Length: 347
Ligand SMILES: *Cc1c(COP(=O)(O)O)cnc(C)c1O
Picture 1 (spheres, rainbow, N blue to C red):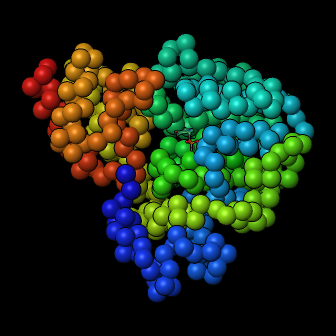
Picture 2 (picture 1 turned 180 degrees about the vertical axis):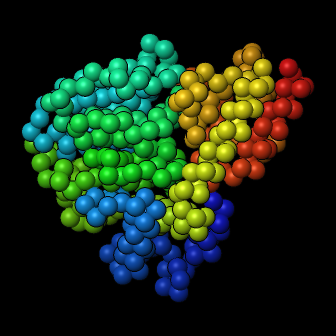
Picture 3 (picture 1 turned 120 degrees about the vertical axis):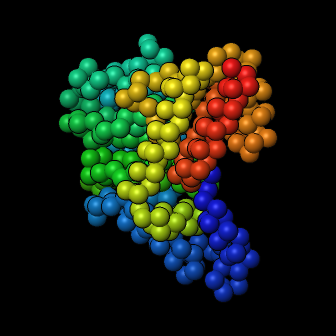
């Protein structure tokens, strides 16, 4: 979901952006109008996340999946080994891609327990020679979230695709944060990268220019034509988030939304969430019904009630409520009311 206020504003500005005579889609990315949009968005992102001055904020393309390769290419810095934590499908994809460029030491894995938890920090077998440690703070498909930032002795690399901007984070604890925008930020096509300056400029030989953070930083994310419209909409989302009171307010709201949904599931004796309560995601809440035969009627009736895209990821089945920032508490209330009603009729 995107905030309705953002969609309304985009609609109002669609044909003529603030008297410029152009739609944002028609602007040159190097024209003064678009440059002002891009700069404002970066400034607002920096303010929301309190990004320190020694970090670059980049607005790129290629999705988080491109970053699976760009992270080792940029952050190996002459080293050959890396540490990766394996907590789910997206961790595995990051690991598979990194193996093309470096030795990957999987410090711990929750795969033996079907990715329903995060291995305790004490159990991780870290390599002191690793160039960085990569993890996935929120596993979008499994609904597993690590709610604290792990303490490690090497730069932390984190795929924040489905949880960036859902709450405040301390950017100082990371070497690099990246996120595809389409989950919690804006439309598809934009990828946010926040990277510490001192890690830049030592890419592995053969790194494509487009994936070289130092080049992108130097060019203000405009080495080539950036995803202008997605960047603009993300900027409107940042303004909306600031108007809501910033990430502390939004984080509390997200916690309340998730609490209500998990409480409903746990107390129902009908719906089930398999995830260790300490690591349940605030953003993606998977749940199952007692009988798979009920999945189709559940989805069809939910749709009639205006509750959309509740099917679980094709790899795991069941249901998944993705309750990103723009989903209001009333949306969760509507969902839990529907769930209770469905249970009464079918349970
Ligand atoms: C969706 C997702 C990705 C893939 O993102 P793309 O932008 O489609 O490449 C990677 N990691 C996580 C955690 C995701 O949720």
